[in-house]
Length: 345
Image 1 (cartoon, one colour):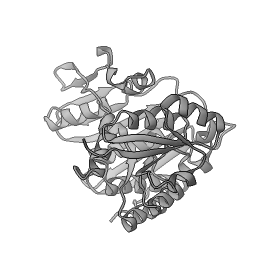
Image 2: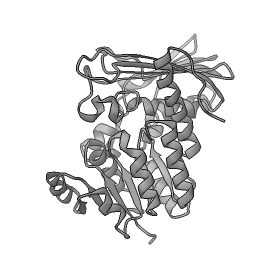
Image 3: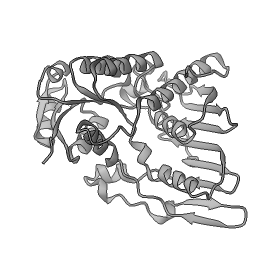
């Protein structure tokens, strides 16, 4: 049997408990060794839920010589500092998305990983959403032809996010939450040079300083266009994917069923109902397209393989830096009202 890399998750909120602890716990090659929380009631729950160590602080985790991998599932504005400190302590690091609040923070984290010769990765699990895998399959097989226009949207809730996600200073808002997944998908789908980023944000929540709507437009050097649209104030949802190729158009509503299955205790039971399949129209015929099954487990399985020396990272640092450059440019554009060229080589 191979080595099980001892993993500690920092934070026991929704993401820490329901995503990271759950997925690490079912990943061969990783051992959920402990979880850190400053709350005594959460530590009691950690021991009850997973039977692992319950650390009182981040410091106690990085001082533990048994820990190989630290997973940071804390508010976005803490990711950079915690990641750099964990990497400097000789730990491998996974951060939840969004990786950081700025491109300069991203670069600090990458430099720390290089200096300490440790793995740094960002939890981009939605690269393995069924709808995105279906879009890539249709493109790979030539059904869409050349895709020059791709809109990806995510409307969730009707009102400001709760807790720290409802505060700008902690990295709240939908753009740095679900929008980070969309920007990652767009920049992965369109690998060409990004010429400019334009962003418009609305602020309609009277009791919160995060955006109610955000639209980010990416213009690529080959003429293709990618659009990210997020909202916390939409009663009717847009398609998750609207892809226009020169042969056909693909439209897909709904969200991947893995999250709901995971919350029910078994992510492998996720099945998308046929009524949520996407639609492909080539101008002569409209047909339903069966969704490729998503598989978030791929992310942490790859992390285990990388740590064991069996694989290269599927989420690469140059890819996440490109995403952060887009988000940085989007925030600047929203402030100035002008298109911005992202800081990429």
